[in-house]
Length: 364
Ligand code: SF4
Image (cartoon, rainbow, N blue to C red; front, side):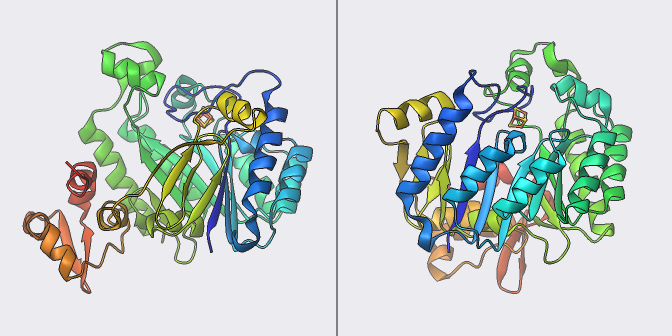
């Protein structure tokens, strides 16, 4: 069965590092967006879909209970796993109980750092005590599948501050963690400032690439000691606690996305909705299609550049070796890939240059 992704692109602030199409939206847009979302979901006829749900964004944890209940009325409620992305500090008992009515059994908290000075520079308002309160609230309401996100490479991050975030994360004893390396591109304010050589948002104080790589490797080693294993480049879990929904992306299984900037895949075609919430609402109110673009990617290319993200790697067949043999042999001989039980996967060294390796499986 397919996964269902729903985008809620509303946030209390725009974080400096964020390159998503989400943030502070025009006043009064939430209600119209919810109406558009319900319309898009109703048109899709989800009776054959939906064993996993991922409510992301944005900050869906900022939705008030009546809005969550309206969404719940539009959706099936037979999830094998239903995740909601939450910003620390936005949880209340009433909101968490509304999530339970929607079937949410897994919450991903965007902690990013446990160090107040690092968070303050990004625009985030929470601190370590906020996260502690939120985790306790989730557990008290019966949600134990909790993911905590960290970002390696925030301005001002040092080996000591990174270690204190890793220690704080370990103390929460959650079954899942994610570590993302800071992305530097034009789509975030911090990324643009770094590219321009400026000083705003702490751009002058971003750790170097080697240091970020060391932060990442330290996290991998320490999570492993706590029984949290890497199963995808950025994702770590106790056995059995891997995200079923996100595994669909890496296994190239179908999923349907609803809302602005949501992506979908039916096994052959990929498509994407219009990027901004304003455009999404305008399309809905004009009775027009939400779809912005679609493509039919080469499944063999995707098998490698999506599948190699996973620790389980990929299982090349004879035609794959014919097509990619020289590149695969080179990566094996230089120690960027390794063979295990007939499968190929990236080594720790290969993961550090994974973006360059993935490029080789894309059309020139
Ligand atoms: S990082 Fe999260 S909370 Fe911050 S602007 Fe982006 S989506 Fe919103």
